[in-house]
Figure 1 (cartoon, rainbow, N blue to C red):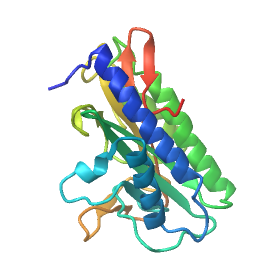
Figure 2 (figure 1 turned 180 degrees about the vertical axis):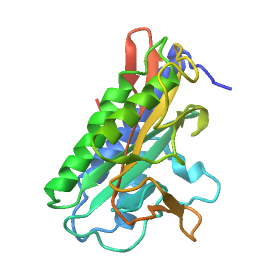
Figure 3 (figure 1 turned 135 degrees about the horizontal axis):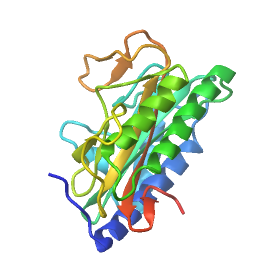
Length: 249
């Protein structure tokens, strides 16, 4: 069931989203060669709690960390660890904040030190695709319009969209209806209505789209060991158009 949020609830979610965005900003300032993803996890947790919220991911049964960290060919749900980041890596960070009963969810893939031109282009395509997809979170559009835009932009650039992990509704639960796949047809899926809040995700690979879950039960990586990217924002459909809730502004 799709739960539409009231204007009051969206304001609370905007505060939750701002906390998540400020935590992401704090993490981003510390991404450099020699740092571990466990270091970044601690930074994120400290910032979220200092700002009066809880880490959303720690409310997921069986998951004990504030962030998911996915370097290079890791795709999603990577458990933070003590391996040091290296110059030239790319690193996906996914996090959320739980504030006054509501979640927010966001992700971004960062350069570690100086990365190749190839990887710079790869990350640019993902971020630009997400920014375009946000524009489809408007009253009267369909979820399939978002999905189709993501698929067309990513595949036109020569990359592949991961099918097994998708965007989703967000609110009192971290994962709510509807699902927002990265592939689809225009005019299909649930119609977007005022008060719908979606975590729009672009999850894509340099090579093939096939992925596997590792033995830890969480971490997902590409089968061909080619790099993967992840970009995500929480967005509300309002009468004035799409409203990005995970903004530090």
